[in-house]
Image (tube, rainbow, N blue to C red; front, side):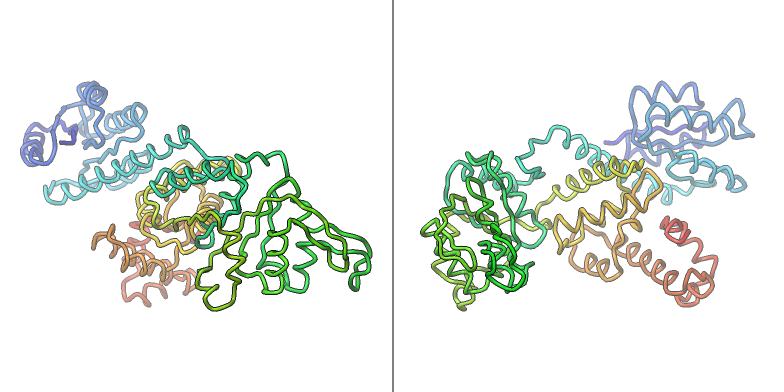
Length: 458
């Protein structure tokens, strides 16, 4: 049972709260700051309720603020809920600006307070898990190539890397775009006996077909218009090292034949040349295509497939890697925070929900780009959802596909992004945005504040 500390000078209210919350929490009460602080130190509660008017300043608020300051100084992660009078709204907002989690105005309705408490404990649990993932980065056993992961799927990939690295056989790596196929290829190279040689990468789908042969095999002087000098190709540069053929499924059939000849004979001929040139290079290939289906349709040579796939590994998409999502997100947060000299330290609870429930069609590369943007766009220490730049369409997709979102979460997600979309579409004209949404302008301002999205429109 979670510990809840209640700091309240009114003995009757203390008794009511202790009785009303005893089934959900281990309730500990204090009547003033001096009694409360030792209890905070002893029990380290995740959540505290704090009456703003404490003795000896029951009619004022300075003792309450002093208590808030000392609690947060000793335990900055504590969620402090300020209990205030109806006429103390300005002081309540000041308390939130000073670090309080939330405020609640008297008279106390137990059911309402329970909702606030449950949300505070839930956020504290998320932040604790976030901190755990942050700390695990320092202890993480990274594979060569800088690959990060603790999920069972990635531990299996790490084992695969170590086993195949010491051999000389060809390797085929498959997986969706952005899953880290080149990182795995580099890791294999760095663990291999060829690590002192070059690691040469070429994307077979990024070079025009009429230039690709010369890029791979080089060319002789005068081989074609503009060939003013002899030029070595990528295959020759990989001699005594590793040649990584990314997106090999894009390789034209005529070049598949020449690549097959190289794999069989370990020799090449430059474009425009007739001399056989011996090259000792290990081949690692990668593709995001269904290469077996490509061989069945004739788009990829079956004999070449068997040559490049002596050992085959498939990289899992990010959406199937569980807690690796937040592990990677925190890694990128730290890296880009240092790179851009920003003070961003953690993700808000809302951001964590979005990151964990999103489908990540672009995989690790997309996650890296989103976190980089968020660090650049954020001025605070906490990354809020608007900085991650999820679209309304992706919000709907997350709502429909995620089993991690409650109905409340889904409703708030859609509400928030509809508000952002309306304000953006109306060029920050709040009156028109409210009209489009079918609500009053004060209600729109309340929603902007509720979802903490005002910074997006400053």
